[in-house]
Image (spheres, one colour):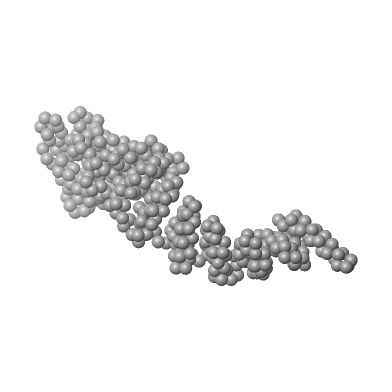
Length: 443
């Protein structure tokens, strides 16, 4: 998850830091001020910054830094001014180091060099800068390190912040879930749970939560296999935003995942009433669900209509499914009609012809079956050619067309899968034909 930093606010921070230095220190708690030499040097720095001569401004600060103790207020102050240069030039990654050093120097003192307001600002922007660096690198080890730093900075911010806010909670939740899923093959579920906690806090801090809160919570719930809760959340979101296509897709998928097929059906149909999930794959999925839950009548009705209207792909497999739906309803003739429609749409499909033949065999119409088996063999494109030849052999035999049967059985033996049954059929047919010839000669 990438984070778009509010860079204008970072520039505002630079101005606030400058203002904090110029204003009189709090009389009781803090009495820090720069030395005269540092103050004079900062005038030169300001002149260079006003002229946008950032190289000169940097040189002034570098010179000042050599003249002050490393742990002094002046040093902390100079680091803040270094920070301003990088913020002004948009070099946000470089702003991290002076921001860190300024904070470290301040936090090491009692009282701290900077008041809590400035300290909070520094920590908050450090979180964002660390997070951005983590998102911009492809090195997972480096990303993990930056995210861990961001987490620590966020925890420091929370400690000195009287009241959090929705934006901060969202940032914290994004950080935690990103760290948790840094290794997608081994997600850190403890961090996922912490992310949900921060999301829930954020949701209670605003009357109009941003969608990102809910998207993150869905990710978390699914990572934790709390799919029933994810479904409830999506139902709530769809009441508010029924025009969100992604929510409909996610909700239907979740219901299928938790084996609530009827709810999935209702979800898809609700989505379609709003103009969504109307792609061929969506219509096919709906039909497939009806078929899988034994609602063959509805599956057949939708499938036949969709094939005729073009709402699903005109594919041989879809005609086969339509026929199978009618077969489940004990309507073999309707099933045969469906297969014939498919064969008409795909005149080179031997497989559809073979299925027609098998359907006729099932209702004991061998003559019709034989016609379509022969058509299937003639057209080719069969999934298992040897089955067609064996079927022709048995069907022709039942019709006492022994020559046709024997020829088909011999063809079956040419395929490894049909060799055994084909050979047995050849032997049996040869004996039948031999006996038949003998009887003929005796008469």
